[in-house]
Length: 174
Image (cartoon, rainbow, N blue to C red; front, side, top):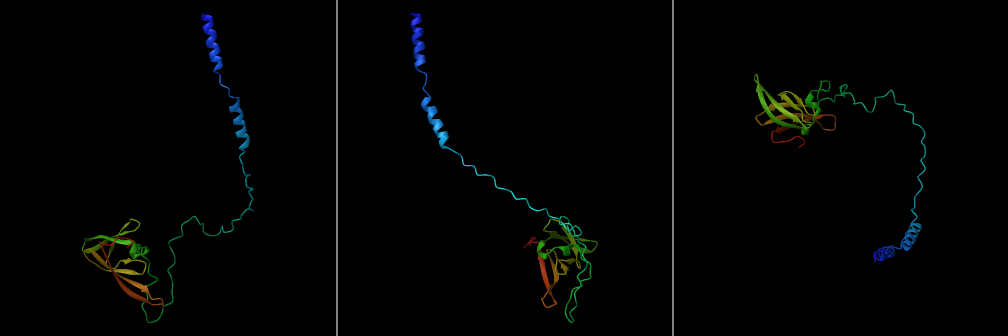
């Protein structure tokens, strides 16, 4: 009886073996239909070599020198002109809109204004200090403001005076 049961189990297990022939056939058909389209690589053209001929000039990767000669302009008679020969001060590298009044202090009887530039540097200035791009000069330092007199070009070769007031409420860039 044992042999019969064992034989029956083996035949039963053998009869359960899957028939995968149709699956293999279908897979082969799908692979045959799906042909990927691969475009050929583009042909790269070689460019002629470039010869750099500006070696005697300043390198484009170096900063320009800040020490430039003063601008000489012909004087127009009988009209207001700034002094172009005067050496520039540090605050003349910034426009008035690039500075903000941070406060003021007094030291040895001199009143100083603290100005913060838009690059984060804190500068000090007193009455008579030069400021701004338009030949400005600080004329008065108050508790929360400073007055600046600038020379603005009128387009005809002359310059006009303009007074600007900067307060502690104004920010750099306004």
